[in-house]
Length: 182
Image 1 (tube, helix red, strand yellow):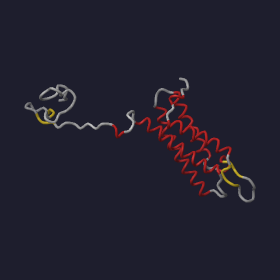
Image 2: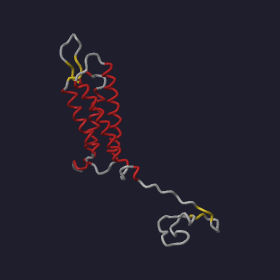
Image 3: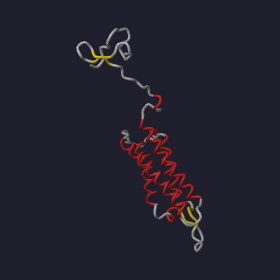
Image 4: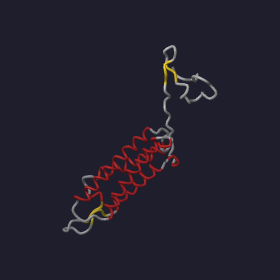
């Protein structure tokens, strides 16, 4: 069960990139200017004491999604992590928007970068879920097959109406397809 980066799809790459950037932003960039009584600025870890654990959990789940997708053959855990990544990324985005409105002091570059990172993580989780959802790609490209009309036969059993039945195995036959269900 080794790490195979070739198994990563666009969604995992987007979510993982957003997580790495958010991790760097939380600790390295100034998020808010300090109150007038103290000069300087605060990074995300020290400025957002109420939501920093949610941000850290979002980063950890996003990186776990990348690792599990690259290391596992079964999609069960990665699809669960995709859901958690989307939800936590969306929650982090909402909490950061609230903090932007509510936090005293002028917002700095780190706050806006962190908000963008949270949106990117949510979008990456969404893309990862979409990639797991259908093996056929675009759902609109899946052909719709309609069931044939049935009529009662002489023995009371239902059978497809031969005039409308165009299912498999009817080419060159007259009457009912031998493979039709009764």
